Length: 274
Image (cartoon, rainbow, N blue to C red; front, side, top):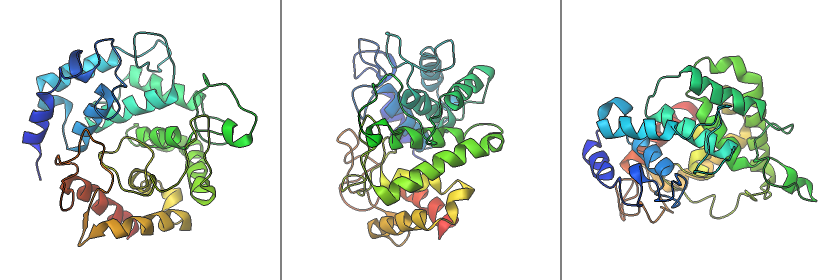
């Protein structure tokens, strides 16, 4: 199924936030939440958009690459920042839009590997450590974004040990469900309601990414999460229970009935785990 018309409509809204390519007038590509440069380009990629499909998308990718720091990390605004969450999100965007790996992109992946925490996950080192082990842990959300990003890395199997440590960290979080990391990523009612497009730590995104890692596919914790998704499905189609307001009623999350783009990803999960 093609969503070219829907992609064209989204591209037509590129100046909506006051800056170029869905950015804000102050140069921020991470806000507003849900319809930022990063969010929109990721959503287009999830609809099957490719960088070569549109001159605007090609220009938007070049714009996004302009936010890369010398060490390979990405910032989200005009001020200096080096955050694993932003870097991983940008790499996921570029991967879904089918931008080929390059020396500069490989540098970003190397930066993420160099900044993996001892517990196997990833967290923002700019946030001060707290007084509790839960606060000082990695962020599950950031770790999920990193694991997603590495699905588009050429030769990712060379990093299997490091990535499997991240997988183990996320599977352990399914069991503990504790709020972890300085941003307090937990597993509660909000996490367990399906969201789409993929943009933050959520059950659907969690199962989709982990189902692509061999070390997770036979783990009972992933299959428990898989079972938790099934109530949102019917006859091979998945409904979006908690859409972001930026996408509510759109092709991603119709007001009634299942989401066809989300169902495509659900079918991929079933093929791997079903």
